[in-house]
Amino acid sequence: MSLGEFDLIARYFDRPVRRAALGIGDDCALLTPLPGMQLAVSCDMLVEGRHFLSTVDPERLGHKALAVNLSDLAACGAEPLAFTLALALPRADEAFLAGFSRGLLALADASGCELIGGDTTRGPLNICISVFGQIPVPVKGTGALLRSGARPGDDLYVSGTLGDARLALEVFRGTVSLDGTSLDAVRQAMELPQPRLALGMALRGMASSAIDVSDGLLGDLAHVLRRSGVGAVLEVDTLPLSDVMRAQPLSLQRLCALSGGDDYELLFTAPAERAAAVAAAGAAAGVAVTRIGRITEHLDAGDAQLQLIDAQGRVVIHQAPCFDHFKT
Ligand code: ADP
Ligand code: MG
Image 1 (cartoon, helix red, strand yellow):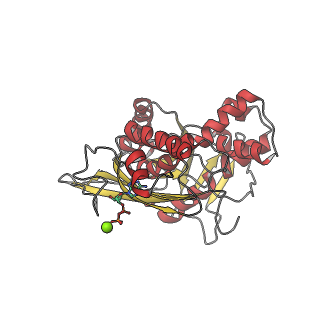
Image 2 (image 1 turned 180 degrees about the horizontal axis):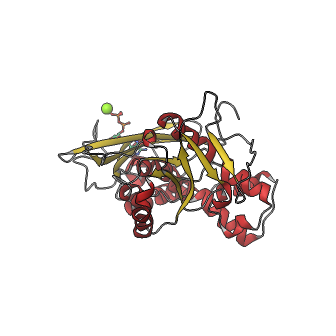
Image 3 (image 1 turned 90 degrees about the horizontal axis):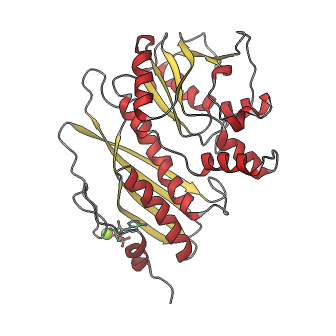
């Protein structure tokens, strides 16, 4: 006998809640925000063939579906509380559900974010998660990290390394070949991104702006520049790269690191006098933080708010587009 909708929910997703006032099983879940806190809310959808390959390990898919949402909380400096899961499945495939829920709930437990509800329907595989986090109500610049706060003179930083997920994608597309160990490493970056939650929370009151890198560094940086009304100089030879990436031709390194996508690292700005505090925040969060440029005044009209320079100070031309669902 195949598994019904409600048995499926009970078996794979219904877990006791600790932080929420009410979890799965009623018409609504209930959250009780602490006094002095704001709810941070974000939603991300993953569509088969668009965001993941049909061959992906279900456990890794479960991890990634939540990780990309937690990355949005991290970018705002929010502490995770809870999430909902809307799931369309072609069939009640128990091997898939067991792996998917294992990966999903392991990351949920590790990040203190509990599953409090959702919706389940038959249809083409589609995973939509909404996350809820909390952030103190802002007092003197200590609230949520926004895209709009970058100021001329600020340093520009990124966490972790860039481009490995794109490199893995190029291997699957057949444009690049890697040895087995190198492929495992970049595949891990693509399939098991680590949301930078501790870093995001540590940057509250320290960073002037932040965003998570999901569509490629240049595209996401452009969002910050537009929202902040500033320009930037990006020092391309300072971009943090993995050892596997460093072994690739320079043109491929730049394509992956600048336009890659799926990095889920934090891109943020901070006033120059906070450099030591930023380094300490990275060390405390256990994640590398690298200065990759600086914010400048908004230039004249036109869209060239970003200048790329190399280690010799020469202007670098880079034209590969960043990811856009309706352009690429
Ligand atoms: P309703 O019809 O009131 O929208 P459902 O019958 O669809 O509720 O769902 C029953 C309960 O199971 C609800 O509490 C809902 O939040 C939860 N739920 C449904 N699908 C999922 C899922 N994929 N993950 C977690 N909880 C789910
Ligand atoms: Mg109902």
